[in-house]
Length: 142
Image 1: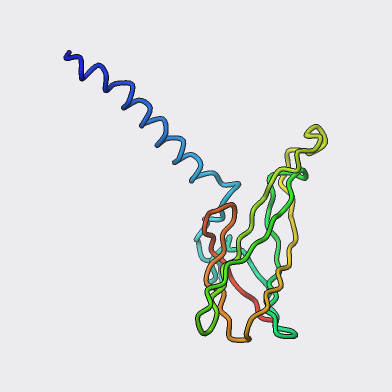
Image 2 (image 1 turned 90 degrees about the horizontal axis):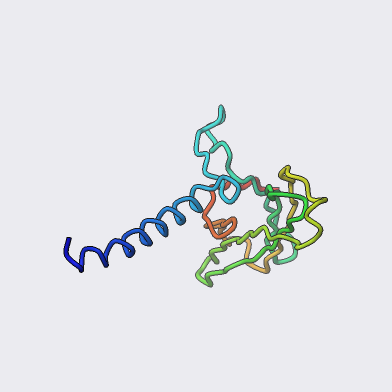
């Protein structure tokens, strides 16, 4: 083999390892909701169900997501595109509490949330992210 070919082998190995790592993160079922099968009502099964209401010049979105353990908390955020009507993206992130992991358990737990966003009644929810990944969602109007 030529010297250049031998020098390229470690680079190719590193690239393959990085690609494998990225693919493993993208396919992790704890960080995304990707089950797109339809249920009997034609709704996306496995979709995040959100309840929406509009009170006092604000849209409220509530629901629940699964966290990997009891030692995780849910951080919520919002991005608003100030078009007419406003376009809203909800950002949900589960983070470790850095507490005593011996008492966390290994079972996933539900985490409830409510996000209140000052906006017009015509504002549209256009996207939801869970741990940085887009998720399918369904909105129930209250």
